Image (cartoon, rainbow, N blue to C red; front, side, top):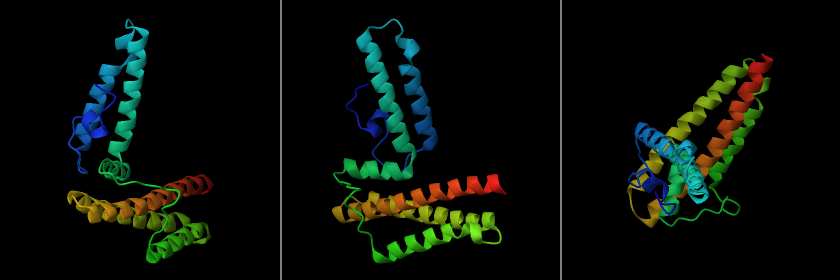
Length: 180
């Protein structure tokens, strides 16, 4: 196994947004079994270091490929689409308003009569929006042209917001469960 492979090649998968999660998990276990340090106990220092590097590469690749958001971003990067998260925050005004409204709703959860129910509604909304975006990303990535790649990129950037919002909602849920 070379350190030069992209994540898809490393797992013997085609570069495609849709991958079978069970197949990915099985290949991950197989690769990790082959790279386990015990297998290299009697090997040279160089072989042991290489084994550790390969295991790290397999771990990173697995984390990227199992996440729809990270997988889409990675697939776009393989196609030559650049991401500059520091500078590229120019999303459409409608989406910016949605962000503000969702953040305000999340901030007001604790003031509602049933905070857990209110939070559950917001989390359900976030989940539905993420599922819709994943479907749209899948469609754009199936088309091999620059316009579709740019549309997919914009959706990836929007999904990053929803993933952060989901994490914040989950943290809020944990704190509410502790309080209530």
